[in-house]
Image (cartoon, rainbow, N blue to C red):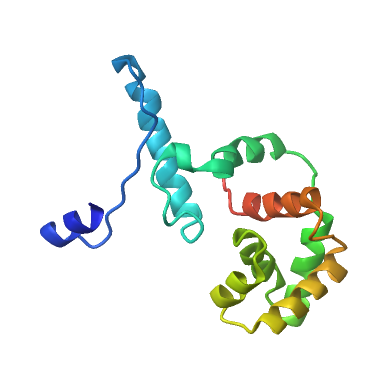
Length: 158
């Protein structure tokens, strides 16, 4: 539908979002705010949310602002993520990007390697380096989810 609008009216970048569906007209404002939240999220995370259009599809992204606000003023710093970022800076590598893409692909190495345009063996080598440098176990869902949230929260600017 968006593509049809873009084609018909010669508009370059069309964005649309859907808020919650409510059964009462008094809920128009919350639905509008949800739609705005979708657009804001799509702007922050364009690759990850490319196919998301409604608030109900946002999943974890709908909680990032709340988590970022909670951390505001806190001295919290992710040890694992800091180690990876420092390594990337010193060695001009992209291990943080590799890890984020790997987790975005539901830890499917084949899909992640294709999206990163690298050989599967290169990805496996990088993942080994990531686990060694960041001292995390990528088979441990809690550790993986924690560093994933830390990476996403870095992109949230309040």
